[in-house]
Length: 466
Image (spheres, rainbow, N blue to C red):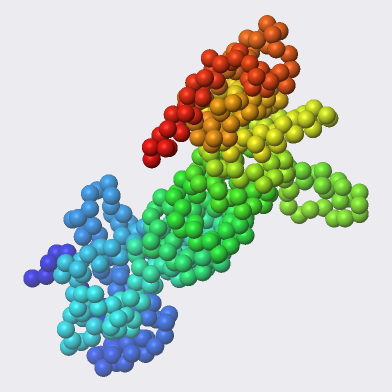
């Protein structure tokens, strides 16, 4: 007695009503002619599938919880229009075959097809099971990419089996031009996206726009395949933070210095401005046609010019320092005339002399990070204090190269700044040049500086022991 969930078919299962009415030898002849034409072979596939569909529904009912069923209540024609139902049908068929519930007779008088034999031709349709699976995968893919047919053209060859469908659903909304750029950049390794990457990676990757991938290709060149090693939050940070090509181009090769999503997001908070109308006005005035796309100017480009070779030093620290420079870029842009020139000079002095040694905690101690409600040093004053510490006997470059970067040093400098503000408010100190001289030549700040000297000595002693 056949098992109630058994799925069985033979070469006669693909016959239509007309063939079934013919005598045996004519039926066999008609079947052989039908197998010559792809259209008729596919019609036979559908007849077989329609016949075994009730068994697939019964198998789903017996093995899948009600809330997770896909085939229940759907007729066969509806299933053919539902990519999730097609996937479920293929999965159930595979499970039934693996468990011995599926019996396929390739041709009259032959043994049932062995499990996993997907290459032998089936009399029912003149195709192998592998080809049949590809037929249904193609139908599923057509529905998945119904609103993005260009992406279907680029990805269809990567749908090797039913396990590809969840990945394809995740990429169905991806910009087809971005897919094209990825394929160009990765070459054969593009297949790794479809086979080796997890769903979190794909969920992030699918939001790439073509300009993201194109600019990354230009920046990374032969290292473009590094994106296969990126974590999903890193990809998402790039997509969210880089919203125009100018950000990539102004950053250039320094992109490789961005090691964390937080650093990328901090740089993404730097301002950019749409200057398309301004450029178009100039072009029209010069008798030229207007631009087709939008154009932006970025604070990344402005600060890179100001900082020069030290621009990448900013990325040796953390996202807080990147945020700080973003604030300074805005401040410079909002300042005019000689005041702007002087501010740029002071930023350049800090960048060239001290940025390589300075932690965010130290910048905060020097009140170089704006915080609402607190008094801040000017750049001139902050640089003057740093110069005084550099020139102070017992400190110097060895101090900056080590102990200066510790939390203890930041606390001491925070106290020094507080003392300076008190002296400034009392009128005991007037100009920034006096700060440097007082630190170097007097003992007014010794209660703050002596701990720094001790830090340096302790570091030197520890080094000598090593």
